[in-house]
Amino acid sequence: MIRTDVPLERSGATGGWRAPHCRFCGARLSKLVVDLGMSPPCERYLEAGQLDEMEPFYPLRVHVCERCLLVQLQEYVPPEEIFTEYAYFSSYSTSWVEHARRYCELMVERLGLGSGSLVVELASNDGYLLSHLVRSGIPVLGIEPARNVATAAIDQGVPTLTEFFGVELAERLVAEGRRADLLVANNVLAQVPDLNDFVAGMRVLLAAGGVATVEFPHLARLFEGNQFDTIYHEHFSYFSLLTAQRVFARGGMVVFDVEELPTHGGSLRLYLRHFEDASKPVRPSVRVLLAREAEQGLDRLDGYLSFGQRVEATKRKLLGFLIQAREEGRRTVGYGAPGKGNTLLNYCGIRTDLLDFTVDRNPYKQGRFLPGTHVPIRHPSALAATRPDYVLILPWNLKDEIVAQLAEVRSWGGRFVVPIPEVAVL
Ligand SMILES: [Zn+2]
Image 1: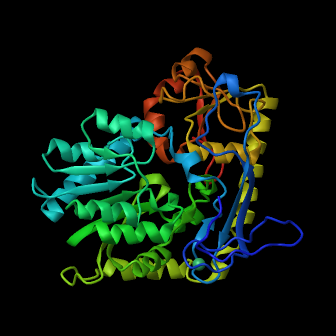
Image 2: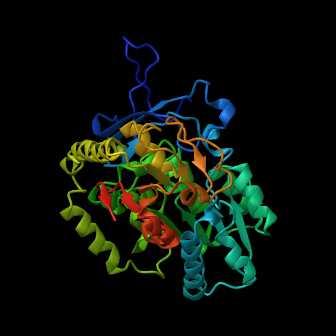
Image 3: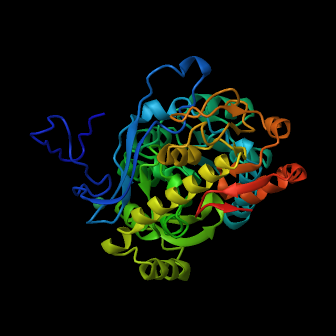
């Protein structure tokens, strides 16, 4: 995909190769945070008939911008290829649905939402969040580019547009008389290729006096928790509060409150308003969190440059564990088939020689194979049928929920293993 909004440079030796540039400020990117090698798109689950076909692999090379400090991947995979059929149905995660329900209750109360309001969610997935508001009689609109999950949302009564969001769509909605009193953008900002257009569109669609909330995994926690497996091609950008604040400020919006959440290994929820809306003063939470990020070194370039060595050490420890288990004749299988598992397994080179199979509750994934590593995905009942010695929990952020659900594994002496922040037997 050729980008025309940043100046392009050509290297004489490699012909068409273009030096990467910051998707926010346009500066040339030269500082590497971590190089996870080549991986296939992490949601590209394979059917049996595809196993002998060639698979596309793209680099997972993370840069930090020297000028604005935005941590980012280059855009290697065209967004249309990623998002037209998306395998992640939010409704399959019990804790995520509960998180959405609590959020809706909180916002209805905090903003006084009712039958005259409009709530718009960007990247509304299968309607797991908006359906709570539909049941309360609050008008909603979902915007979701992945057709298969959008269809699931419409089927359960959540009006949903199957389109990419930006200024163009926002202006069309406003022309139809639709503005959002609450604009929700959960776990989408990282996945936006044209960040400035997306944020500008949010400003357009937000009603005067309205509130936008934005959730994303917090870069500070990614570094602290060594969560390198949350880096994948679909996530172009990795935000601190500092960089998010800069991006929204350029788009004419102000972060007036921030909360820390346990979701996805540690996320932030930002509350945003129009720059001109003086009715919502900036709360102390913003200043406090910016100060903590500065203590962690996230306000200067050298705070970003030691992460890669920790990632390499984690790979050696996980491989050491799996090799030893195999040599002792123990059987290890996976639990879950999340995108983050695919980054981990591809980066570490873990295939069926070290992990027999994995299981997942999502019927879309059952019977398919993990991209790159070709580890088969089975129904969770395969655990009881095979009684493995170790169950490697790939969505480690949900480990408490999973260990509770799978209590029977203990009955045959099976143990749970998490790979991140470093390999540990539970
Ligand atoms: Zn930049």
